[in-house]
Image 1 (cartoon, rainbow, N blue to C red):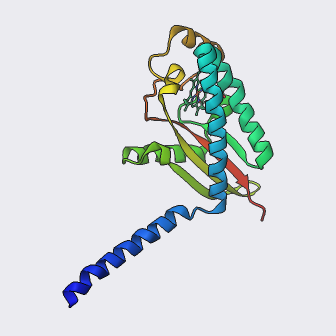
Image 2: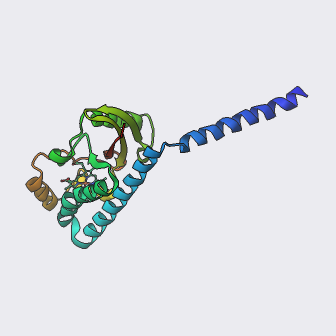
Image 3: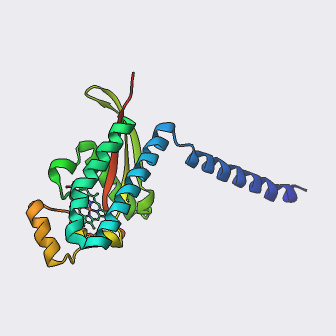
Length: 195
Ligand code: HEC
C-alpha cells in the first residue's frame, strides 16, 4: 500500500511546487508589469522605425533614426506615462544622454554575470525600489540583446561610410564590437512613488 501511495505523493508535491513556481513567475507586481509594457512599446516602435529606415535608405541615413527618434520616442512615452524612460549601456555611444548612473552600472554588471551563468539575454530584467533624493523611486531595467539588425552600427565590421558618419556625431563612441547575443545595453525606467 505505502509503496503505491508514495509515488503519487511525490507526484503531488512535484506538481504543487511546479504550480507554485509558475504562480511566482507570473505574479509580477503591477509596477513591473507596467514597466514591461512600456519597454515593449518603446522597443517595438524604435525597431520598426529603424528597420524601415535601414531598408529605405541604408545605415548612414538610419543613424538619424537612432540619434533623433530614440530620444524622441522615449520622451513621448515618458510624457504620456509619467515614467522616466531611456536606454543605457556599459559601452555607450551617446555618453551625454545615455551614460549609466551607479545603480544602472551595478545592474548592467549583474546582467553580464547572469548571462555568463547561462540566463538568456532576452529574459534579463531587474526591479528595485530605491530611496532617491526626493523620495522612493521604483526602478526597472531590461537587457537589450544584440541582433543581426544592430551590427551595421554596433558590430565589429562597420563599413567605412558608417564609421565616418559615427565619428562625426560621436567622437567618443564606445558602442562597437558587439556580437550577436551579447548585451548591447538596457532599457531603464523609473517612477517616483507617492508617499
Ligand atoms: C543605423 C545605425 C544603428 C543601428 C542599425 C542600431 N543602432 Fe543603436 N545606436 C545608434 C546611434 C547613432 C546611437 C546613439 C543614439 C543617441 O544619440 O541617443 C545608438 C544608441 C543605442 C543605444 C543607447 C546606448 C548608447 O550606446 O548610447 C542602445 C541600447 C542601442 N543603440 C541599441 C541598439 C540595438 C539593440 C540595435 C539593433 C536592434 C541597434 N542599436 C541598431 C545607431 C544604430
